[in-house]
Image (cartoon, rainbow, N blue to C red):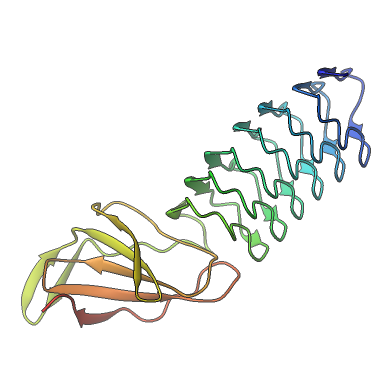
Amino acid sequence: AMETVTMADSISFLREGAFEDCTALERVNLGINTEEIGPSAFKNCVGIRSLVLPENVKSIGSSAFSGCTSLRTLTLCEGLETIGKSAFYGCTAIRKLTLPENVSSIGDTAFYGCTGLTDVYLPASAEKLGSQLFRGCTALVGITVDENNKVYSFSAPTSASIDGRNYSLLGYEIYEGETLTASVKSNEFTFATDRGGFRVVWVWDVNYSTTVEVSGGNGTAFANLEAVAHGE
């Protein structure tokens, strides 16, 4: 069974389904001139544990690494511009995702069901995001968005005046319905999610907070900030 694939530097495109269902494949060495990884190229290659994209890769096709359940370490190159639909669907071992500064487009359900994913960073360039990108990512607390992202960034103010008193921001809580799903003590963050039905509560002290409604299934939609009672 084939355990290692080393691509020649002369190859720029991996065709659709090139190594699909090669379950014994553990190591992939892409050539330095690889520019495009075709749809389903490594789909269901359950033995791949790490992936480093060479610097010239610009596009990852739909379902290219879908079902690669052992893929834990994912290093995306700075030249990457587009990630196709369901590209990493069900890659349950991935823990951290840092999207490079040139990524502008990510297709629907690209990281759907990545149950091990805890941290995501979206660069300023990522302004065209598909729906349900992180649906089913049950370990994901939030998404850090570059403050220069014109579509998805949102930061809480660091202080507020409520009923004539000044408060500093202590942190934030995330609710799904009435259930508290995360509590973070930090006043330096940007939070976003594409999972609808969430409430983000900025916590000022034990008695006061500010609620921001998060809705929709594509990117973020924030209601107006409104001071509300918290606790008593």
